[in-house]
Length: 108
Image (cartoon, rainbow, N blue to C red):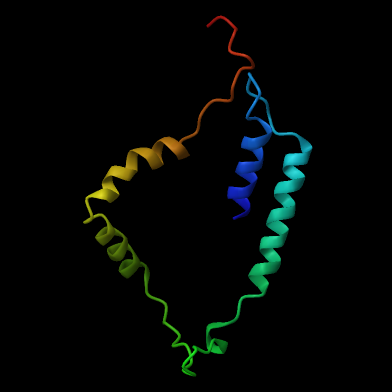
């Protein structure tokens, strides 16, 4: 959630700007604060052996699988026709892009 909230903060701070601006120190400090809260919340998670369901039964701990089993299960996800359609969107959102050059008024 820290990454999502940090992205929202950047979006809100830059929403009305007519040109692309970089993040200021306040954005970084806010992002670090949210990530610190996430760390504390992560430490509060119970170990699966201590989880008790409403009916009184204990949670059954699932054993880890090996790498080949995980690869097979991930490939099974692509049997759904919607998954391959997401590949271009994921590729476009994660590929490296050049940094903006200011206002965009410079000659090419």
